[in-house]
Length: 345
Ligand SMILES: N[C@@H](CCC(=O)N[C@@H](CS)C(=O)NCC(=O)O)C(=O)O
Image 1 (tube, rainbow, N blue to C red):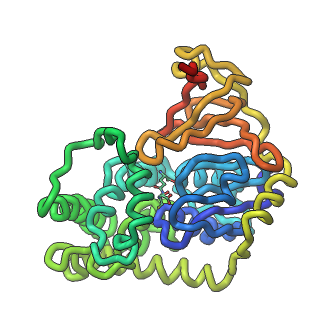
Image 2: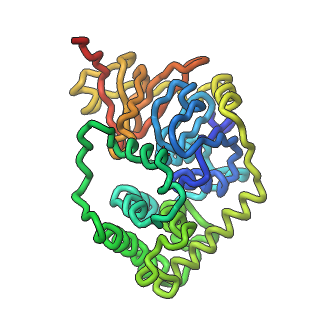
């Protein structure tokens, strides 16, 4: 079972998406090691496992490596059921579960995170670093000499870009101020302590608060959204206290790799279900497939042997420098394609 196995989180401190996992682990008192990564490629610590996925975070439980914070959190929910040592922070009723899920969709799929990246202060040191700019262009599929992929939606450029994005961020903040937080509750699900629903809603806004000047001074202020800002402060106090109480071990890439490769698997092999994507490609266990995210970082296709596929996840085995690991990706936001060797001309 997962709970006896070592956990390694690959991340960097400025990643707002990785914070979601850091806070989840902290709020549930789940011990883990962290392997800090550079904010841009290359990441040899991850490459040595045979993994070409380029985004952060990744989390391993034993010899299983999970991509994408959403799958990571779901797996931690499954593999670490609530106990006295690891209290639950999940929604309990159906209505609460729906709120938890919908907040996740709001922040990621409705584009609030993408819009938040458009309102970052332009004077941040990273934006003056050509290596960073080149790396992030590559993340979005912009490769010199090649036609860039179409954006998900046509977005205004120039002086309209920022205010348009800020209006989207403001709208999500207003939703919280005028609905869930309107009655003066401390936490979104009216609980005594923060839950996963708070994590799902707070991460983008809290990230923006760390960069003075990100919120437009006239439209997103503590006066306009007192309840949202007070809720973010409360959240910060709780997670900061947890971080002090349970310091997390830092390990280097080689130590992380040997921790992973010397451990057992967290889950049994799942098998390949005959669902639509498998059927249309005639996929079966043992086929070589490519797995990649469809929203960003799609030039980095994970190639491996298919060992599991269902409506929720795809699992492939990849071979690294010193052994094999099983890589799990969510189906939501990822594609699975049978690998076809390109014929040489
Ligand atoms: N849906 C993904 C999004 C991951 C993501 O976009 N992560 C950002 C960091 S916050 C990233 O990887 N940026 C490029 C990089 O660091 O290489 C998840 O939930 O994990």
